[in-house]
Amino acid sequence: MSAKSFRVALAQVLSDADIDAVIDSASDAAADVIVFPEMFSNGYSKFDPQDATARAAWLDGAVDLQGAFIEKFRAAARRTEIAIVATFLEKAEPKPFNSAVLIDRNGDIVLHQRKRHICFFDVPEEACAPGDSSSVFRLDIRRGQVAVGIMVCMDREFPDVASDLVRSGVEVILVPNSSPLVDDVEVGDIRVAGIRATAFQSVIGIAVANYPEPKDDGHSFAVGASGQMLAMGGKQQGIIYTDFDLDQLRAAQEKEWFRRIR
Image (spheres, rainbow, N blue to C red):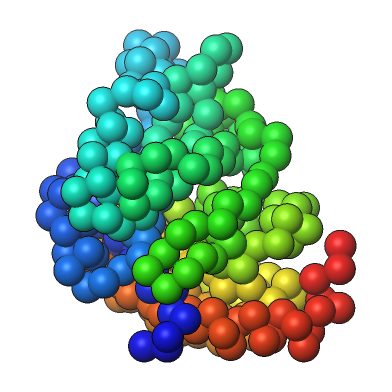
């Protein structure tokens, strides 16, 4: 491990997993941050759009930013001294948000990201409102700091989100996800190819946490600043680890500075 390494754990688990046990495992493996898949508070569950009762029940499952669901992650961060990206259906009016928060190792919420490019054309996100901005936070880790941003699932497919983060100086983007990454029956592994291209075009590291089978197809993965594959999981539940060499990443950003002009 490099002296300036940023270790990311990707929690490729279902929403009924023992959260404390998963976070403890990542902490024992010396991870700096662990990322959970998209909308983990309900497992990215769906509802029948023709069933008003089912829709109402789904909306009733939205959680408050200051509520018990997020507090469990904050308590785990304080206990293990590991940063956490927790994801949830965020309670709001008139519509909830598909949200993620970065919790630092002190248990403080330091970044609050709402998915900007929601899947408004399908359930469940046709019931959600989109976010409207992205920001970057310099996260304290064991070996210094790293500039971190978040893209939630389909945000990774739209250049405006990455460009906003690059303008704010991002070094590593963390992506909570819920979709087939490799075995999509229509587009195959195009989502992986898109992430690799984004990393290369912007000279950034990107790490994607996805649900395992049977929810999605797993294959949580991470790529480096030239789009090279650093790690990829299989289809089953587990934790995938990757180490971003921050010295190498920063040297690449300095050398390839022109790619980061937006």
